Structures are given as C-alpha cells and as structure tokens.
View 1 (cartoon, rainbow, N blue to C red):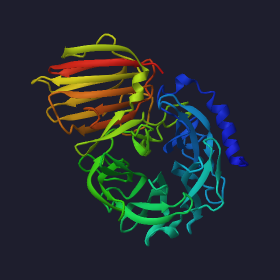
View 2: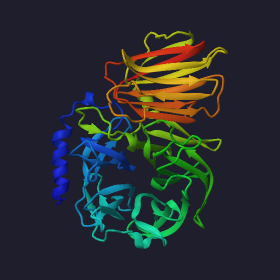
View 3: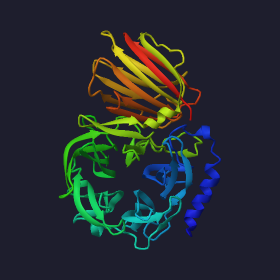
Length: 492
C-alpha cells in the first residue's frame, strides 16, 4: 500500500463520493463512487459477498487513465463502496489498468488478472497501447501487484497477433484446481479473436488455443470475453467493435453470445448459433459469475461508447451497470431475467386486469420512477399499435411502441430530456416468437429503463436522464387492445 497514485485516488473518492446525495444516484443500479465508470471487472463471490470492480477514472466524468473502482454487495441490490483497488502506478501498467477478472486462490487470497497498458510512441508522435496481462493478489480490500508482471505478453500469442490489441482476460478455476482464462486479441486474418490460456497456479500462464474469431463477420475486434458452461452447452460471450448493421445487429458496439459445444480434452469450441444479447441502446462489456447456489449471473456496462459523451449537466458521476441478470438456456437461446433477489425489495402491489385500452389512459396507482412493472398486451384485430409511455410529465417521456402487424417493438427516449447531444435515441427489435399476447417486464430506475420481453427471450436497455418528478405512466392504442398491468414499488 505504498502507491502514491492509488492513495491519491482513494483520498479523492472518499471526499468527493461521499458528498453526492443518494437521491442523485440510481436507487438500485451501481454507479461509480465519483467520476467515470465503464466495463465491470472482477465480478465474483468472495468471502461471503459479491465483489464488483469497474473501469474507473475518479477525477472527471470522462474516460481517463484507468483505475479499478470497487464495490461489494450481499444481495446484488444494495452496494457498498470500497476504496479503489488498482491504480496505474507500475512500470507495466503506468498508462492504465484495463479490464480483467477475479478468482480465489487456494490460500484464500483473491487473484485479480487484468490488462496493463504501456504507451509506445509512434514515428508520427502519437501513442499506441502495448497491452499485457498482469496479476495482483489481495484480501478483498487491498491488492498487491506481483513483481513478475506481466504474466502474458504478445510473445505468448500465435504468430500474426497484435501487441496493441490483447486484453480483457476472464479467469476461472477448473475442477482440478488449475486456472483457465479467455482473452481477446486481433490479427489481420482472424480479426477479433477469443484465445484460451491455462495456468497451474494463476501466476504462470501459457497459450492453449484459439476458440473462435470474428473473421470479418462480427466486428473488427472483440472485447470483454466470457466462457462458461450452461445447462449442457458452452457459451462464448464477446463484445464486437465496429459491427456493421445487418439483420438484428446495428452499427457500432454490441454483445454477442456464441452458443455451442466444447471438448475439454482437445479444447475445441464448435459454434452452433450466435445471439445478440440486448437490442436496446445502452448495453456493453458483459461479465458473469457463479452465485453460491449455482446460478449464472451477468452484469454489464449500461452505456454505449457512441453515447458516452452525452451526460446531464452538473452530474458528478457517469456510467452505471445493469441490474444483474440470471442466465438460463431455453430451446437453445439464452434467457435473461432480473435476479430473484429483487423480489425481496417489492413493496406495494397494484394490479389491473383485462383493461380495454383505446385512447391514452392512466391506470390508478400505476406510476413512479423506482418500480418493477409487468404489462401484458393483447391487441384486438383493429390494433395498429400500442404505446406504453414511461417517466412522463409534460414534454418528457420514454416510450415502448408495439406494432403487432410487423411484430416490432420500438424503444424511444427522444423526449426523455436531460441530454442535448445528437446521439441514438431509438432502437427497434423484431419479436422472435410473436403470440397473441406480448409480455413486457420493465425495471424503471431514476436513470434507466430495462425491458424484458416475453419472460426474457429478448431485452432492451437504455439510460434516461428525465427529471425525477416525471413519474407518469400511460397506455394507448391505435385501435383497441386489452392490458393487464402489475406494478410493485421497490423499497430500496
């Protein structure tokens, strides 16, 4: 604990973070203590609680030299901030401690495996990131970087892979006590690729194999990989950069899950299908962990790089994580649902059943900004569209519009307020299995909306910065529809 840079960050965040009123943050989504947050890191269950680290620049609400912020929770709802865990203070990471992950060592210590960044000056005077993989060990509060760092460099990669794009290791322990990790790298032939590494002890690493790659189809580079078994299948998750729009994919960054099979003897992963993980606006950089009861739980950065310059004026934090989601497989598709812990926070229940909707309608008791709302929409034959308006007051609102004729759901935050930049405000998705009734579960918080479609078959996620007194919720149909609405206030 002799790092001046780390001590400076800890002192700054302790002073500034504590001065941000709780009602100026989301009620149940994690934000940085102060300053900037992007990728969640080191999501793990350690010493009786969940640990979540995150890419962090405490001194401003813009991206800067990356630190690791740190928070813990026992229920995935209430988070306690701990002091920053890592700062860019070593010769091998002096320009940034990029994303990584965590595992427990046999002696009980926690191991952090992360990407260290060192700038290399180019002939034209610009800098490029030399990216290597590094380790630190600690007790859940304080962490020490080891002198043998880095433990993986570009020299450990197959021929043709870049030393400038090699990052984001995700570690796990194998049944025999050894460790494996998946990281991403880039080559001219493969594009973005997920590479598998192995270590007997978490400190000495070697390359194993290439699991899968974009090869011009899924972006130019991948980020934030994950690799895990789920209900008899193997899932490789990654975030393609510079994706080109086609089918359900939009331009820019997104998250995909490659679902298939894996042979642990030959280390061969066979891709069977690819799934887009979220069809909204703000969702990237996923990471999963195992809960003590065996559930696979996922978090993500609830933001997008294309919209990261847009933030409310005067806000002293920027970036947040999604509410954690349980992952399950159903008919070969990943299903996402809010972790069941949220049910313990449910307060007053309001239920309206089989209500006929034509013109814009308010239902008594339905409204608010910190709620868990489920709406079942059954369009009649004359229904051309149905609109659910959220966080509404005067000129402010965010809408979900369903067009049964095309089985299309559109999320639109154009009039949410709070932002003045010309960024993406709408996304549409095709409902995969359109039925007579569409079911939407909406988690609404002070600065976000998360939509779970048909029990989590699809999701749409977006940040909103609407004034907090905009609490109205209305229902409207172009034609006729019947609605059942069930709302719980969340006591957090």
